[in-house]
Length: 408
Ligand SMILES: *Cc1c(COP(=O)(O)O)cnc(C)c1O
Image (tube, rainbow, N blue to C red):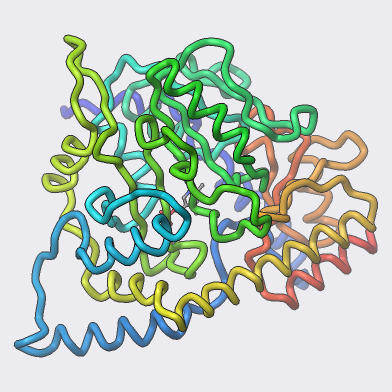
């Protein structure tokens, strides 16, 4: 019989979202009249920007003609999209990132897990706690960790706690690590990293020859003009960082699928023998072998994000969600809750009231207000006692949810 990858057996069996469904289903069975409001999911709710739809329709028509038909595109993405990205997301913010350093893909979730393909097994890895579960689980699947302890921490990973006491700042580890996952604006806490904090991380990485994997999926939600949008705004980051970006949240592409990864050409790793080798070439080789590119139609849709029309429409989308976040913050604060995040990110991170644990507060909100959120403990042990509400919803749902919470 075929052998399975036994690393998968170390996974904590997708505990969070199935458990949420189980509790919601149980509740609905005995409360058939209840109208639930789901503020738990990290998925967008508003329609695609019209500029993107228009561009994708035009691309479909092109594909239906002899002159406009296209087969396999470049595995790295079409140059016109990579140039639009380099110009708008980097050069305009003073970062010297070239089109060649950009790899277009069908998602940051897969990029941030596939990147392990080009990294060795002996790396010491640091993640934050709470964390976007993909970083941890992809390392478990790739055999880069030991087993999970009772707290859910895997042997072989270093955890950097994010909590109210440290202002949800990712503090530098006390021991050297080779690989560091950072996500700012942060999912799930909604916290951001200041320029000074990122400078400290880049300094640390250069000192210890470590690699930072920087997930900037939520950069467009940043409102404070002083906050960096990219790790490459920090001097020296091109020698120690890879950045993941996605069109999922700023342009509503969660179901359309387009993202990109930036690997600077000067970024080096080392072989077992200690020779230096550039990571760009390895990722280029990996993508050319295992990936056949994003559909032409979708890349035209992504390109339209950078058009004048697309820029104003995506700005409006982000503003809409950030107004939701502001409403959630304000109403919860008035109702006596302690809230964090939600000012430069679409997530509000709430302290569970009266010493309730995360699941206790989940059940409380579900039963008393028919609201579904996400228990913080599902993102890691340090998330215990916290709760995530997402600003991705209609205005009506957000306002109604806040009325309900205020009345319980
Ligand atoms: C939503 C999200 C992404 C985007 O993933 P896609 O695969 O591009 O949709 C990346 N990182 C984090 C932390 C996210 O929450």
